[in-house]
Length: 296
Image (cartoon, rainbow, N blue to C red; front, side, top):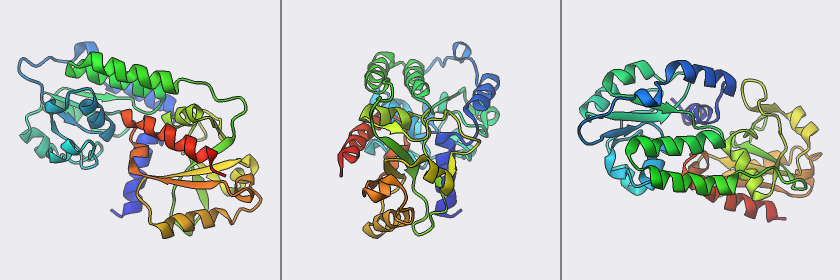
């Protein structure tokens, strides 16, 4: 699988390629009720199937309970020493079985193989898209791992910083995902109802696309972008870019000179895969967004 296709799968899993309502209905049918989760008599052995879950487990002090991770779980550095077990959508069942987990935790996605994972160990797939999802997921991860007080503290701080309304007079910002440099034909964007929309509001900006859900996929035609006419365009790249790639992305946007953001040189690029991992570190994005909004 090439890098672009793999990146697209990861982004769609995080941002919800299907409508949130449909996914919620699937979760209600397919995710075991928390109160009925079996309890192991021995020490917990947790396999994490999502980078945000891995980051959260270490942040709340439960890192020593984690025995396996996905190949994308690389934070904190201690997590890199753990065996990998594939991905959420394509887990390596043999590798998971060898680790003898007593609990598997991951993010709820439509095609996650919940039934197969449950045959190995009790599995909890948690919604992890909106701010409320993330806060509830952190608390539930704390409860499942026996580290609820620290989880409550982290979720409380995130809620305090991020549960703010869009600023009445903040600039209208298009939060865009990076595409292929030199090929700006459509724009994948970050919805207001995902945690990135909350981060933008906390940073002092308003999402130029304020619809809760736009179609099935978060994608805009260039005509729609022109009609929205954002004051600022911020491109969040899910990888580290070279300087040439950064320049090319900004240059691509200059092909839309009618946009206010382009005319006023307010098209900026932020790169880093951590921007797409909705764990406790997402608060760092607020600070980066604030700096970007102040740039002229």
